[in-house]
Length: 355
Image (tube, rainbow, N blue to C red; front, side, top):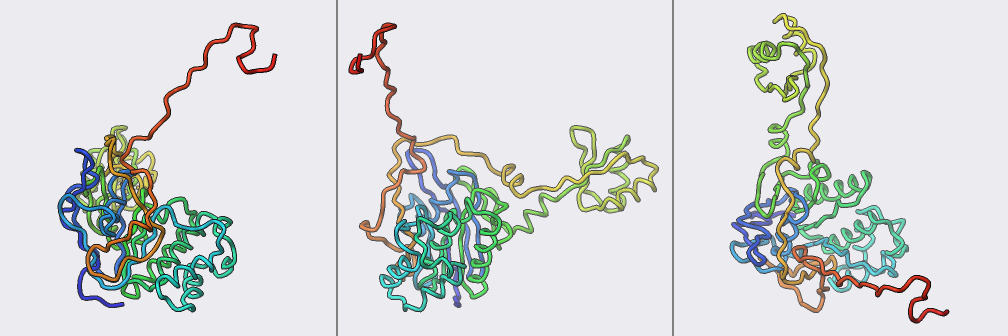
C-alpha cells in the first residue's frame, strides 16, 4: 500500500441540525501509514465526521474527502451481522458482492483471530468477536483506508489489544485508519494522531506524546514550607511544581529521590511523597464537556452494515437500498404519553376482571 497524498482531508467541516452544530469548523488530515483517533464524549461529532466522509451525510460547510483510490473498509454501528449466519458464510456473501477471491475469507478470519469461530453463528459470538467479524468484513477488499466507528467500545483488554494489533499492522503496510472512541485510554496507544472533539469542535489536535507532555504524572509532596521547596526545585531545573489547594506541592518530571535530595540540601523537611498518575480519561474529561443541547427534528440517521465504499477519490455515494434507518443521535427520545388507570372503589374488582 503506497500513496503520495493525504488519505483523508477534513477542512472547516460544519454540519448543523436546527441551530446546533453536530460539528463546527473541524479540520485535520490523515496521512498513509498512520492511525488517527477521534476521541470525545457521546454527541461530540465523531460519527458525523465519518458519515460525511462516507457520503451518508452532506456537510453544511467545508469538506471531508478521501484522497486514496480503491475501496474503503468501514465498521459502523450496527455491525450488520445476521445472527443466524455463520461467520464464514457472512464473509462469503460480502466477498462475492465485492468480487473478492474466495481465499481472502480465510485470510481475514486469521487476521482478526476468528479462524476457530468460522462456523459459529454471529448471534453466538461474543460482543468483541462480533466487532472482529465486522472488522474482517471491512478488510476483505484490502482497503487503503479503514474507518472504524466505536470499534473499541465494550471490548475487554484482550479484545482491545487484538484490535490494536490489526490496526497497527494495517498502518505498517502503508494503510491509513481513522477510529472513534468515547475514551482516550482505549485508543491512545494505537493512534499516531489525536483529534479531541467537544460539542462538535476540535479542542486538541496533535500527537499522544504532546498531550502527555502537557499533562504529566506528578508526585505530591507534603512539606511544611512548600514555597521554599518549590524555589529549591526550580533552581535545580524542576520548574513544573504547583501548590495544590490542600497545601501540598505537585511536582512533575522529578523522581522521589531527586525531590528528597533537593529538600535535604535546602533544609526543608519532607513529610511524605505519593504518586499522582494522570489517567488519559482524566485528561479527556478536562478537555471536553458533554453535549447538553439536542435538536428535536434532526433528520433520521442511516447506518449501513460494514461494507466498502465505491472505488473513488472523494466522498463515495451509497445506494439508499442498503441503508437501514436508525434514530439520530441528536434527536430527543420519543416516549408514549403516560396512561392513568381509572380509580376503582376499594373492594370492587376492576372492570373486565372475574368476580
